[in-house]
Image (tube, rainbow, N blue to C red; front, side, top):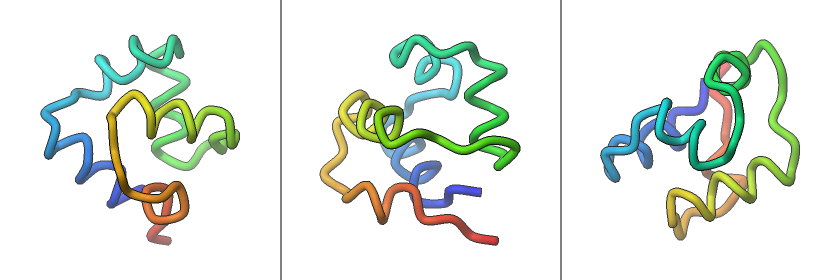
Length: 66
C-alpha cells in the first residue's frame, strides 16, 4: 500500500518487525496500517520517518497506491 515506504525499508534493510520495535507499536497494528486497514497518524508518520532516517518527505514516503 505504501510503495515508497516499503522501498525505503528495503534500502535500509529494516524489517517490519524491527520498525515496529523502533516505533514501539505492536507488529500486528503496524501490519494493519501498512495494509490500509487503519491509517497512520501524523505523529506516527513523523516517527517512522525519523526512525528510518529518511530524507524523503512525509507526503512522498506515505504516498498510497490504490
